[in-house]
Length: 237
Image 1 (cartoon, rainbow, N blue to C red):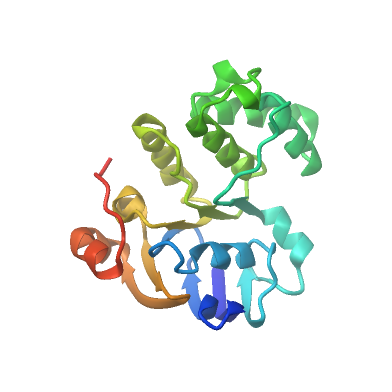
Image 2: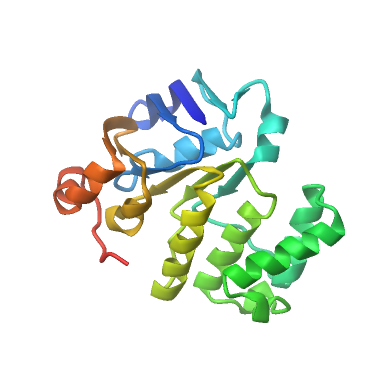
């Protein structure tokens, strides 16, 4: 479960996030929707423990955000909007390196890497250098590293960026499986791409949450919501 109570992170008078409060149930998927500059990335950075809030409180799986940074990093998977890549590593090498940092035993790690790469249709490219990968493949590798350690909380910032239609469809299939065991929060400005997976939808504008809907209500009115909140509409997959 993700619980946020009055979180603020200000960069200027009109930039940042302001007094955010919401809850996301365990083993569910929520969307954080809003136009560019709404504060979605800042919200996820704070929840990922990479940025300290100015005020407010939050907890994930019962662990307080401010007092349990190390323990939270063990249970959180995070995909930032701009994913860092190591061009001199192959796909297998980077996942092996990151898994080793996470303390996953080598035999178990190799099994997890093989399974994840199979699910994302990347196994045949595992020995390919990251410098030779397409944007969509690099994005997929970033997603793979976020779920390698089987996180309890998954924070995804514009995870569909760069994915082609086939890659996005496969990713959505995997998300549908993950939400059975993981609390997932996805930020995006595309209402249609992930809406049919959502159990709850939070709308942000100007650094504040301006509305919330159930996933079912959002799916009934995607077009009108796009126009109301300045979101970009894409075709359903």
